[in-house]
Length: 269
Ligand code: FES
Image (cartoon, rainbow, N blue to C red; front, side, top):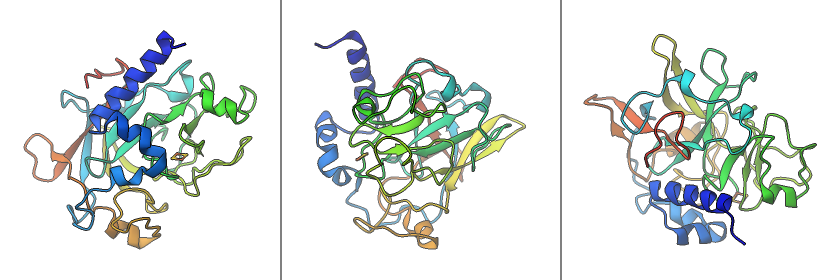
């Protein structure tokens, strides 16, 4: 029997899928052959020659302030899914802030803010199927593979509902998690977005992808490509569509952070 909570979750999924231009049908087929939906026909055509510098903004173009971002590990139920596209328009990433955790590659006054690709590195399922879950909100699917409140990490996990891949949000680029009751089917960590924090304005910018971790899914020109090291940098920006420039700037782009809830900034998508 469907519940109100189920309907609310479904609404979240619909909103995010609409954002990324995907249909419910694409979602249903995602676990079978997800990559075909994320690989644009222009895959072999570079759209930018280097990573764009992009300011994180809300849907009204106001810069997101680091101090506005809620703490993930303190949420008692479903953490608001905060997603922004980077480095190209069709590439979602999950924004996470963890109180009390210094995250490798994290930014902000306490280095506790980071962003990971919202595309699962197993077969490419995207947020909200891939999402952060605090200790107080273990996904039903994770319980089926043996997770309990006793063995779910207290700082939460990024969990993919498609086939159970798990990622540790506290670890930065080296985030693949295999310490739970069932191993992750993915072989690779989630790519980490390189963020920059401007202490004077409290603003956050995306400036690249962490070169310490290969981007296995999306923005690779090689189908099924698994390329490491310096080659990742030159392959990342092939295919897809560039972000848009921010308020008349000639080199500063913008990426809009949308949420699955009404806060901390308007989530009017
Ligand atoms: S796509 Fe298979 S676990 Fe995420």
